[in-house]
Each structure stands twice: as structure tokens, then as C-alpha cells.
Length: 269
Ligand SMILES: C[S@@+](CC[C@H](N)C(=O)[O-])C[C@H]1O[C@@H](n2cnc3c(N)ncnc32)[C@H](O)[C@@H]1O
Image (cartoon, rainbow, N blue to C red; front, side):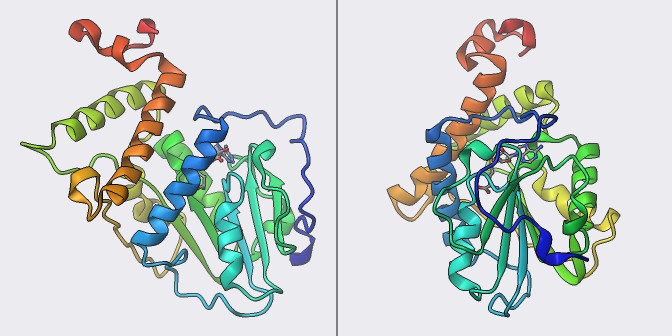
């Protein structure tokens, strides 16, 4: 393993010519601000922790990979609780959003998670992390992505996957808006071939690719009036509105999709 030859500079580079951006979610600056707000929300729900895997973050030369890192915000936040000699690598298919002025030990590089990881990444990381990208994968491609990520974990290392579950909601009187949101998402993401709720499938997929010592933690997100304060309740609403925006980017205005009570279909674009 040539562990220190994973990209050690954080200079921005254009994607290789054969790397086209296949992601169909929003890409504007507002989306990246939303990701920061979502990050802060989950950090709070996780009692200030970013990593739930039982790993000592303060050891020297800790090696971490964050796949689908967006602008690298998770890694930069993690860098506050790791040793200065830690090597914190992040990759994404869209390097144009990589943060500038990164901490010296945060290195971002372009990679498509569907591709085999470079040799220098294989068996190389103490912790491999990936969050909120499997919704754009089918079950089959999720397994493929997780298998490839698992190959980057060094013996004795950990992999932490964190993903969404839009299906498990409170239903019934008083929750009609949430049910409507879930139904729009279900129908539209089915058309797109997306996975509305990869979260509950993670443990099964990880088992299939051979992950050992599996632990699953389910996080509950309190939305709107269910939250302690108005501000806390508003944040998941922003996340859900962004998900709806993603639907509109791909399928056209949601209002039109639902007009006439017809089946949601691509031809209604
Ligand atoms: C919803 S954002 C999540 C970002 C970050 N992981 C977080 O939790 O804030 C999804 C990210 O996945 C990236 N992405 C989508 N498809 C990808 C692919 N095939 N390979 C690598 N990154 C991808 C997008 O560019 C985007 O940055």
C-alpha cells in the first residue's frame, strides 16, 4: 500500500476528460449552503459527533476518506478533532465546488464513486465515510459503490455510511403535508430510478460486501412543529424543499405533475 501517495495537494484540478458529471441534483450555490445547514443539523442530532464508528480520531497519521464530499465541509469540520498529522482525503465527481483555503491536511480529488478507486486508496484508510449520495443509485449500483468503498478500508479500519429514509414518517391526522411530500418523492424518484430510502438498506448491503462488526444507528429527525424550536423544525423542511427542487430539475414543475390527478410521468414535463 502506498498510503501517502493519495493526492496530497489540495489544488483544484479539472475532472479527467472521461469523467462527466452524472449527478442530477441541484448544483447552485444555494444547494451548497443547504448542505452546510444539513450537516449542522445532523451533527446536532448526533450530539456533536461526526463519527459514530468506534475509532480514536486523535491518533497520529489517521487516514480518512470522505466519498461524495461535495465541497469538503465534513472533512474540514472533522479536521478540528483529528491530529495535525492526519491525512484527510475527500473526493467528488464535481470538483468545481471544492472549498479553497483548506486545512493543509485536507486533500480533495476528483473521483466517480462508480469507478474503481485508485490503487493508492485500496486497503488504505482507517475510516471511510460516505453520506447522502446513495439515493441516486439503484439497489444494484449501491452494492457496487459500497463494495468499492469497502476495498479502501485498511484491515482493522471502519466504514461509516449514512443515508436517508424518506419512507418512515409519522402518518395520519396532522401529518398530511408530510405524507404528500413522501408520496411525491416516492412516485417521482421511482420514475428517475432513484432510491427514496437507502438508509434502512445500508446494513444489509454492507453485510453482503463483507463488512464485519456491523452496528446500525437510526437517527430521528423532528420536522416543523414536532421540533423543540421553530428554528430547529425549519431546517429539515429546507432539506425536503431541496429534495423537491431536485425532482423539478429532473421532471419539471411538481404542480403540473399533479394536475388532473393523472399518473406522474416523464411526458408531463
Ligand atoms: C447530497 S450531496 C451530499 C454531500 C455530502 N456527502 C454531505 O453529506 O453533505 C451529494 C454529493 O454526491 C456527489 N456525487 C453524485 N454522484 C457522484 C458520483 N457518481 N461520484 C462521486 N460523487 C458523486 C455530488 O456531486 C454531491 O456533492
